[in-house]
Image (cartoon, rainbow, N blue to C red):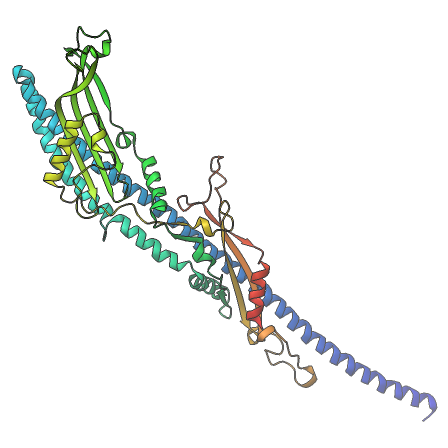
Length: 454
């Protein structure tokens, strides 16, 4: 064999070795690219699942806060209904007495007496029906055990627990596993931030805030005062000829009525009275005249109370009323007869609202939820997980803690919807404007996630 042939034979051997090395590198690179692609694809799906889990958890928390708002509005409506019930009862009692007394006074004119007697009979029946309906209404809405208010408060407590860290974790894991059964997600601890976000408003100053909302929600008739001053032109006063004031030359019919919450926040009171007032001289030698309650025509009072009736008017003291004698008669009837069914009122509710003193930003508060999602390293379909390659072709992935992780965060904030009228409304649990949004995880949440990953 000549020298040229020997050289060519050696060159063929070098190419073979080089080809084997290139084939090994190509296969190794192929395994690496396949594994990297699988890790990136799984990581992308895990990130999407974590975002979906955080969003869904925030949606549920927003719905819970909005339910609190609807429930609080419903509780306000229950209080308004109770106030209306006692108002209508007091008015029905007043009207019954008024028509009965008016029919007695009209006996001197039989045609009018007949009409007023029929009206008095109708008023008496209406009073009985009103009392029964009002008693049932108060029981349905404000009974301490099964009233609508109590059921709303219990539902608030139940749903409030469903939106804590454990509840958010359950929602997040369900969403993550719906994306991929190999995923697992949980809500990280918020160090009690959610518990401090709201609280039961139990103190009297806190309950007075709800009381004011109820009073502002009353219709004009219920809110009162239900006052009327009517000049009786056909009835001259006792001061005729002794005064030049035209208002003091005739007698007046004065109607007075009110509905109010007692200072202890446990009683609704309503009273309606009507009396004729005459102008009389102050003394035998005095030329001045003053108004006196000369004839009582109608009266009625009622209370809705938690437990034993008080039998008195304390929200607006009876002694300061214009129709003093009529008011005293209304109180006496209320104390003597009692009001069966009206003792089932349980007072101004202890609702759940924002804990303004604990909020970082009382004007723009927000509650956050951080979700950490993971998949076991063996669940990532890499070349190693598929048992592809042996020896030097075996690639081993090193995941943190043997798992692939993803962190996502969301918050629930108070924002008016885009279609809402332009106005300023601060956050509260009376308006259902709580909305979720995804946010960047905070440094504290990243640090907490790092402690799980290790």
